[in-house]
Length: 254
Image (cartoon, rainbow, N blue to C red; front, side):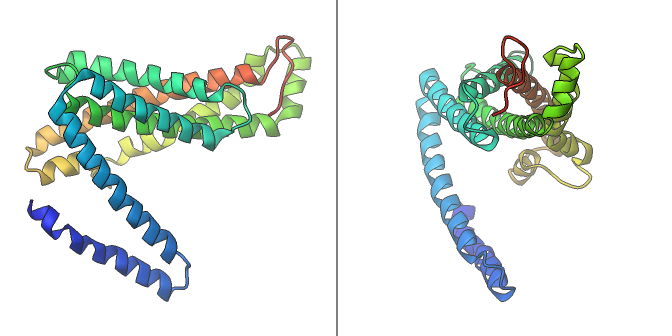
């Protein structure tokens, strides 16, 4: 409760940032003010909404929340890749759904073991973290692959004319796209605890949790993100390739 009372003082940091922007003539004052306003409004609504869901403790409510999060994540990722490619939204949604479901199922059954299985205070935060990273991985890998294919028409068609299959002609481009989608996650794992303390461990430490337990939970989160993001990028890039070639193995540019 003390934090809620003192939270308005945090606005001083945003006001200072706006003042710095004005002083340096960066033109970011409006963006900073709008971002701060949206942060306050969105997180306030989310806080009250999740409070209701946590109190209700219904599996249907939890699934509804997760479904809404999945839809938003899929639309955001689709918009960052392209809106011209047919059936892109269901491809991304299906990829994120599969990777998130497998990750949460494995984690819930073998590691966290919430009681009941749909415990909203466990499932929703974990799903939100996985969905967010899967969304970013899908967007980065998908955008990288689409842009590379569109700019490499001559090379791809040369490989095809020499007898390569579509998968062989674009194999390196796909690998590069998948690696690009994994870079943020791998970088986070490389420097965690040395350069940064991620939000999960920071929140637990501020909440008074044992540092070793907080560190263990952060390890779990990072391992979940590595698997989910990799699986998502694999599924998204594989699905995208099918949209760039017809049945005659001819390249189609979007």
